[in-house]
Image 1 (cartoon, rainbow, N blue to C red):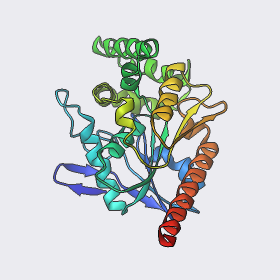
Image 2 (image 1 turned 135 degrees about the vertical axis):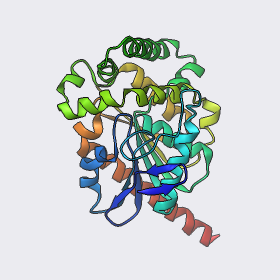
Image 3 (image 1 turned 45 degrees about the vertical axis):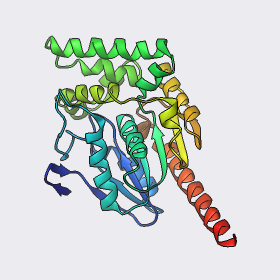
Length: 280
């Protein structure tokens, strides 16, 4: 745990080697990364945390101030404690926060991995109105359902991400946590809609980047992540066959393999650059 004046931040680590900071999405905690950590910790030092309002990380946003910079500041504290530079990996909303950290350039990053970030404002600014509209229609119906007293309204959002029946297939304790943290998730969406993303902004990211999506994910999510890879100069796009949004649980081995290969490739590239500088 990190103790700050503004509140506690979840922090855990295991393994040795190059440091990978793993950021979960909404309605989740660092525990979501256990299947990935089990695959990576024999070769890498894995640091996990939780976003604002989840696990032991105290919420700092309000409905009137949901700016994603609050999330970025918390993640920057995690990176500082881990000791940079680090390889930053974010899933879902955690991927969007990781992008914010990369754009702010307040902490040293060796590389970035984005796993299905809801880059909704990029869809809007790039004129992808149909896909942007699908996100808008889903969230507006979800918010209205919760406001009208439907405690299980978040199931529609989960099924949008994972496909029909996803929420019902989850263990009861996981469903209960998602329902209990619905108010936090609604603020997450406000943070996402308020995060200005454009091709011009993303062009400023100058590090090795991997963007991954699932072949069975919602078309709007697939398009958003394809656009991320197109707008970031050094980004590669990977599609995990048969996976949907919750790939870190359902396809942990595939995801871990992609992360490991990306990290090793980024470090080989950095070593080559250093050797070139020495030669010159």
